[in-house]
Length: 431
Image (cartoon, rainbow, N blue to C red; front, side, top):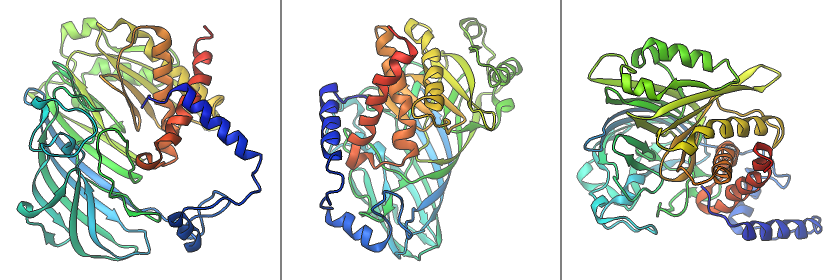
């Protein structure tokens, strides 16, 4: 997300430079960090300690989204792996859509029309335990559920059925963009992080701060009405089931080309028949080792794609997508800015092969990053579009690849992304 002013970042950089001259001085460590050093999960070198661990999970998401009512009906099947040395007697869940629930504490304004009853859980099973959903301990965006002991090294299966209504306005990183376009994030109950510093991540989501999630595997099925195209974290698994042949061919060609390919054009939108016949379509995606899963959908966006080799040693390519409202003329060049950003990250700064198979810039109402996706609003001039595009895509490294706890240390990823923005933008356009 973009919000750090230049003066603040310059101040941070000057402090880093100042203290680097005293690198041999032993600085005081916070008590909770010191305990992690003593337990061997962290080390003075900055590398993970010999006893470092992370918990993980595998999510199976099945989502039915009705654009007219904005109702999301979903089921979540989770296999949660306790890699910690601790026995877990409860699980903490994050219910991020409850930011819009009446009575929830928040630091962002929500219009009265968007206030609702929050996420409604109709079924919750953890292991062999069936929860009484009328007595769930929900506090704001947190849910705590006592469980049978989950021993170190063991896996517990969770099954959840739920629904909620996506916000129409009050667009805080997610919600309706226009009539027929939606960016849907934080849309499923997920297990909170349990780490070696704080134990359970009990911080509520208040709207202003950002997120901290485990690296997980996601298998997702998103069902939408006919005529809607879906973009998401992960690789589309069933292209032939949802797209007609000419669009499949264009995608296959674009994945091998450095130049820009038009997947869906103005003419295609007018002609129709982009998706296969049927009243609805289920789009299936797969993503591994990512901290989150989001999707976006529209029935009137055009779609441009370019690709490039990001790892010359293996020949691995990354596909770069831009999906946008054709009325937003400035967005026509975003595909070039996005592709150049991925190129610079892979070969110049930080000269590290882009880790994901694709990156999609979606024309939305925010300035926010997600694994393999960004939700960017159209801006008034090219300089702003360039800076926003490279800033949000650079977040791929910080926090998504590095796994930063944004809730507590948002200055880390925002600082790096802003610094990269200043350095990469002149490489895209020297003016």
